[in-house]
Image (cartoon, rainbow, N blue to C red; front, side, top):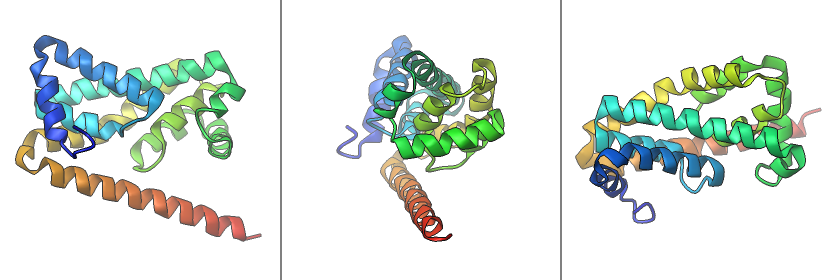
Length: 190
């Protein structure tokens, strides 16, 4: 479904599970967090399609909180060396410095900015002194706007799902390219 650009099909599939649909969505979001095969906003969009704007938002919010909690716990349990095999060492080092300096505020802000690795921040936060409770609160508050937006778009843009997803991918890709270029330009400065 995803390879064919059929997010609407994912929404229909989730809805077809009836009462089990929200649990299936939560499972997909946790797997996405650990394995990162698809961006989380795609599942949020599909939740809006399947369950409506409000219920899709609540399910997505719970899914983000659960997925980030699993990544945080995995990092705490496995330690730095094993986490570096999941996240690049360079990216982890940058996130470490930022998280250690700003703590939960950095987690909150990273959730608001498109293109920042959601899972990378969760893994990195698990390796810092940030408490789980503060991490979870910062994460949950930080993803409220994004999950609300994508659940609403999923619900209201049923006939335009491929277009909205295409635009979302383009915006995230542009943010990633800008971050890479900015990082390269800063690397060249003394």
